[in-house]
Image (cartoon, rainbow, N blue to C red):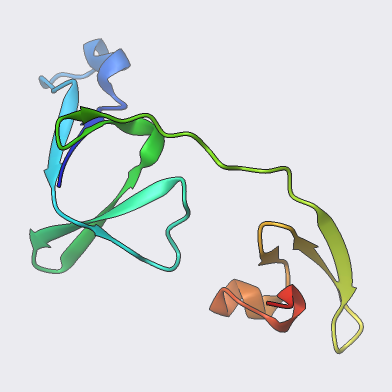
Length: 114
């Protein structure tokens, strides 16, 4: 897959001493990475020690020569509060996030109920 991405520095290019391109082209396949949110894409690379790059979907202009526009699926998250096993209160949101240390460390926890 060939991905054309807007250069976020382009609007301020006059502030830089070096020339820059308006767009970047990246070749690779989309890979699933647990910690990469839906608003971003992990794209494989052929660079040793740099197996993938993360690209913000809102900056992508084209994929394989076809125009691309990212539509966010963000929904207003519902919030509920749960009490942990040692009496602490944690905030659990509808987008499957929790403020407990277990979620912060592992990305999942028993408070999510999934």
